[in-house]
Amino acid sequence: MRKLRLITCYWPLLLLFLPLPVKAEATARLEKLEALIAHHDRLYHEEAEPEISDAAYDALKREWRRLRAQAEEAGKAPARERVAGRVAHHRPMRSLEKVNTEEELRGFLEGCGKADPNARFHVAPKVDGLAVSLWFREGRLERVLTRGDGERGEDVTSAFRAAVRGFPERLRRGSTEVPAFMELRGEVYVPPDTFAAINAARNEEGAAPFATARNFAAGQLLREEVEAVERKPLRCVIFGWGGTEAGGAPFSTQTAFRAGLRSWGVPVLSPAWGKLQLSEIPDIIAAATRDRREWNLPTDGLVIKAESAALRNVLGATGEAPRWAAAWKWANPAAWTTLERIFLRIGRTGTVTPMAVLEEVRISGREVRYASLHSRAFVESLDLREGDRVRLELAGDIIPTLTDRDAAARGPESLPYSFPATCPGCAEPLRHGESYECRNWSCSRRAFERLCHYAETLPLRGVGKATLRKLQRAGLVATPADLYGLTADQVRKLNGFGKRRTEVFLAAIAAGRGVTLASFLRALGLPGIGKAAAQQLADRHASQLTAVFGEEAPLPFLAASSSREVSLLRVALADGECLAEARRLWRQVYGLPR
Image (cartoon, rainbow, N blue to C red):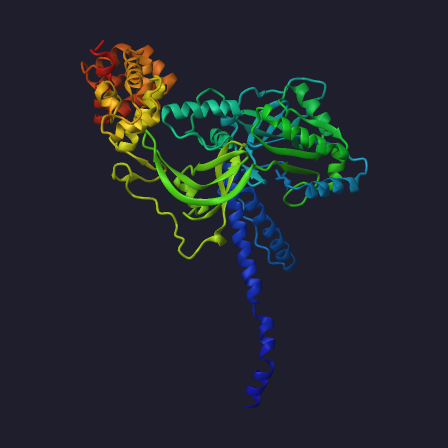
């Protein structure tokens, strides 16, 4: 009994020797955050396919820092994992702290001012590309690494040389002596006008456009299968330096560094503003915000740095970011609205694109009702559901994009969106995997998109999408070839078509006869056969193609060529329905085999 009473009185002391549940939960949460942040770092820095917004990522990092500090005090911080197969940077490539408000900006600037009341600052565009480290030995480009995890990066030297235009292989002699070894830090990007041309060509070829310029730039360096529409579409600008063999800072100021780069023939960021007093920075930010559309840079803000290398040494860095630099991010125009419905758009080549129907919202002076959800992976990564309260942004002030959703606003009836297994246009099974597509050439939705592409490409002036929809619903037209069989009596029965409009419409159709072979091939809307490929096929294989479409020659002649455009045409015409449709159209356009 006495032993029982002792146990009853002193049992709470046993808890001192047991792990506290709260501490265990904090450790588990920290480990989960480590893995989650590493996952998002990889998606952003290495694959350029972020799943969450910058604000959501910053919230994860803040929680991680708080729990990490607590764990380090208790000596229970989990070890950080290193990825094998990467190359170590001479100095860590840290990220930048973001300042999103005037208060945060003032705090950063005043922090630098406390270390040096006479501090000067340097401001330049923040390029939204892929950060790289370039090693120069004896003035020659030796190696190019991605940022990776900040400590170690992927070697992309060969891809850099193949995809980046205008960057020197050797530093020329200039006003500044070239160090024996120099590690330069820069950003690889694709100019907006180049990116627009690339996506225009992909749309023409029936390929899905790249979601962002950063996706494309990263793809050129990290994924060999990505093809560009022109040789060397990327650019690289240098914004800083890393390690040197001699150690220490090779330049006294950022402005002197820019001058040295120019003398070596290295591209630098422009515009840029140096030797600024603290009081001048708000005016620079205002001017940059006003003029940024003229820069032809994929920029999402400004980078503000202490000008002096000596001050940078005094300020130092945290484990994550330097204390002497910060990123001022421009906020995209944004609003919260409701995701009313998700539907699938079937393109002419069969690509399935999920689309959002939104509660109409006014944003940046325009009414927005629809937004692309890009891919199945995008929908699943954000866990978007019909009825969700969602954040809509205009990326680059232009493209409607969903960036977040309010999970707390969901009701108990909310269910994950279920992607159908069959095509909503033809009920045939959809192909799942890397691509999400309908493979049925006769699918009514694919056929209608091909019809619209044909009318737009030739062009058949005045034959718009609304008219084609009326013709399709009336059962008068299913493929482009059917347009040439329409009669005046059939067209006049359509709502809104009188005698004069019918005459104009049929004249536009008739103008599509006898077009050039290149125009005909391009208007077919076959995957990969855009303007350039169509012209090459017409220039090199006119007689053979005339025979094939005129049903005088068998298809296998295409096997004699290994060119890219012939390979694409061969794959498309291997589908018997595709070939039959092309031959019917040929007879309508040219009457007889030429």
